[in-house]
Image (cartoon, rainbow, N blue to C red):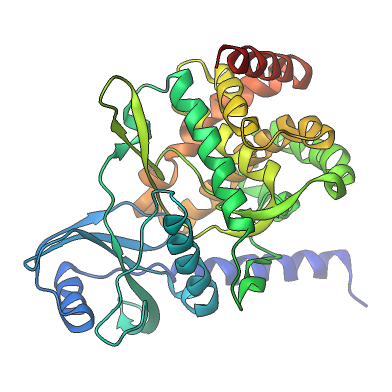
Length: 375
């Protein structure tokens, strides 16, 4: 007979086993190893190499003697065990690029392949990592420029266009997008309950528990009315590049990082986009209206989607907070980067939660309607 104590013990064992496996999945490759891989796989001689930020992979800017600018992306060993998933992500980037969106494209290796599985010892035994060389997109992070209503409108419009295009994509391995236990999917918010003890003693635990309750009682019963699509899933302030317009303001010049792609719903992409844009705005509650207006200029929400938007935005805040806290226990040396969004998001989550669903929705939907009327 399995008792409650036994279940608790087994759950903790699984938690710590997962911790150990994830702790050693992120690559730790040196610049000399990058130079060697670029030469051997792509026939290019690297003149400049420097590290770029990444959550659980490793990215390097590479400028070769032969010309051009690239990003060498080394996937973590866990995701590298699923090459079909990375193949679909790479295909999606190329598909979006062909359909007019500013995404990276992959450079073929001398073998003719778009990715290579490399066995590397990063300090804890040899593991296999998928390696790709992607085009480097010019621009500056959207987090570095003022988020004007017009730019937020363009972000919302671009997010909707992206999901519409992805929904038309065909690929023999498209089923790998059904990532049932993927912690970052807004379909899997309930998985946070397994990690909620990371907030023990933190007043935020009450907020997270409240949001999880609203998710179970408000979102799950209405999910059957959501429209399905493939989500980018991580349109955050570090994954959107912009460049100055000739007149004034900025235009979107790059969409990065397709590692969180998953089969989801259109409303998920909108909620994720609103959440991340609030973290870079001096008045977070003012973000939702312009983003929503941009989104609905392409894809108006249905009643169920409108009803659940607020809870889904808060749910993404909770995912960011809980997963970041947990991941810092695996990679304390990368705490500053891992906690970037979470640290900025904590006061915003508290503010929106305290203002409440009715008030926040009124601000968002009224602002969206007024913005659309001015267009």
